[in-house]
Image (cartoon, rainbow over all chains, first blue to last red; front, side, top):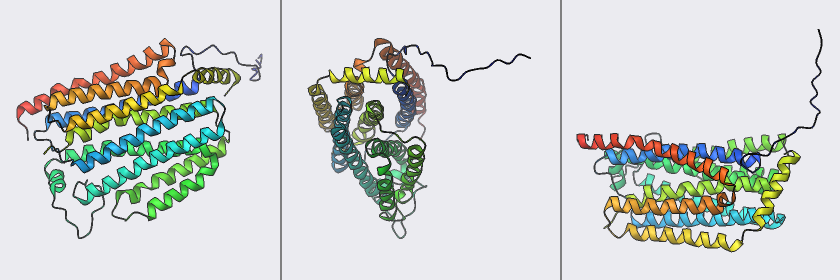
Length: 265
Length: 111
């Protein structure tokens, strides 16, 4: 029987992409399109619930609206710093690139911290989910406790939507941290994990949610161990696409979840 | 990445060098301004449907600016722009098929 030798050494011949750009970027766009459908489905489900529920509550006082507006400003500013990081990497200025990436991460962390504080405040006031740990000896009786009892769809959609978005922002900060600092970021990530885990009470959902950072640290360790590399301008641009997408989604969550549920006196 | 991909990435980076930095600051300012308008309108006691229409209009405008300038879609080739954006808009629009059912439940007077 004749044997056919197949050579894997021959140089590959590629055709130009029909999209006119490199495959890594096309891959990220495809991921973002699928993620858009995830967020789209949840936002449509929220809207469905809202339309079909008479007397949907509008409990957010001006304090919550101001807080959410500052969070929005943080995200918009982070998008500006991200685009400047992409520009610095295209110009071949690694120091500026790293600085802008760190600024983007700082804005993202500011967003998560403000959001976490708001969640904790709302939970303490009674807006909670059955899966959240119970506060021992504390029975909230305020307006939010009443909302959670009479319209359980409200806390379910609020925590579902904003929680999924917060997870995306957190993972985005980790992603940028790896692109900016490579393996040096992993011990920093572990410190963040310990601080978030030990610095929050056991009754807070963040006490357990902090373990996302530990999982992220393990995944990042595997990635940088399997494929150590200096991230170039294409990596920064692709990371930027993800970060802007996170900002983009918030542009719909902010008006739909917060502004349309603001208490007007 | 292989050499071919690297060459494309370099070309894309080269193209980005020609975009003025100033336009990113303008877009950022416009996004902040639109956010401020949204918050202002929230307290103007508008009818909910009118309010929702204005807010969604502004959100779509903001999304367009982010995708176009920050995500550089404005500078991609037409095929990339049309295929990605059309498929996304069609898929998202299809989800509206559920809204008549939500209105039906409301009309039934379900509590």
